[in-house]
Length: 382
Image (tube, rainbow, N blue to C red; front, side, top):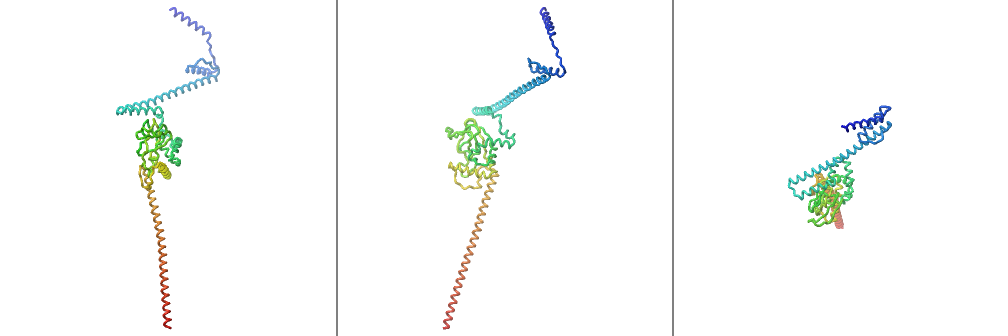
């Protein structure tokens, strides 16, 4: 009780002490009074203090605006950081959900552990390389065709021009081929193509390495890196190719490798619009095969439809064959007319010669008979 009474006395003493030192501020107008009140409210809101208070209206406005602007910027930064963390967590959560789904599916189907590990390693590769966040097909579908074409040309034109088969092709054809390129990913040890297989696509190495190996895979002949192109001659259906459009080597991926592929049917779809380029590519392919002694001399048949060609190209080849037959028939007809005209002329000359010879023989005979009659008359007179 005594302590409480002493505390009360102390409080009263303190209040009395500060009562004489309280200063009541007076303002010339309500705007200044309201501005200072708003300023102290903003400081209380952002937990700031120990700052000299403004003394003029402009200072009130400036300090209040500066404090609120700092508060907005601070909130914006914190919000963006929060959104980034949330997005990263969401992407990570989606990937983990995909990973768990794949694992559960493989376990339910009793997939061998070696294959399961290969799938898991592949998913880990595309996550660490950032490929989960980039989908080229989605970008192509989202962007306008013309703009995406310019982007694709900037990325692939230099690589495609390094291909000996396409180095002199017109830009429009290369543009069509670039738009038809598709991205494929191969994991470590995957065979991209095997010797003897029918070639249905050509490959451009975007990243990683591939190697040409022997039949048993133990001997490595050569390693190919970024920008290398292979398999282009097997998709052209070149007449006389000793390999018959089949692969001539075994190509295996070294680690994870990204390849752009051009399908055979897509190439022929583009060549169907550029027949002159098709003829030029065929001739270049023959030259390349001849250098490796892989070309046989055969007579090209326009109706030879070996391989999977589009219907439009088959019709074009049929038209080409019909035009060739018509040209040959026209040449034969012209030759026949020329021969007939020459033969008639020669017959006329012969007839004229024979007729002239008969006339000469007749005149000579008549002349001889006339001479004999004259001689007989002379003899009779004598």
